[in-house]
Image (cartoon, rainbow, N blue to C red; front, top):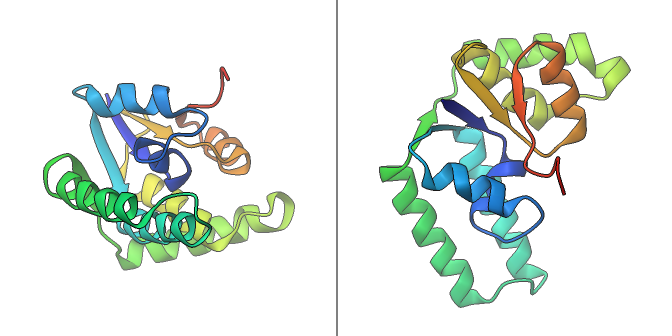
Length: 149
């Protein structure tokens, strides 16, 4: 099985929170894990915020960055930005922005999914309730690590 990870689920690999055990089980399996280039940026932003808020120490911050860099090279398939992704994000915002409040970065994550991933072979790993709802409306299978918590 292939999984495309939104940052809301992806961060759980590196920082313990609700749903971490479920995400780690996928990480440790032979599952193919896709992330977007956007996820790389959001990950760094998220862990830097955790450091600024004193949730993690400087040593932990550095260890997370190092582990993440190693995983980028050895564990994940990183999906690249393209004009197709940007165009799709714009279309998704037009379709879902008014009624559902789809936001910029979520529209980009959603666009990576719909541009690069096949519905039949990919589960969308996400903990964001709005994004889960919208992706489900597009008939993708969703893996919500917090579902049974």
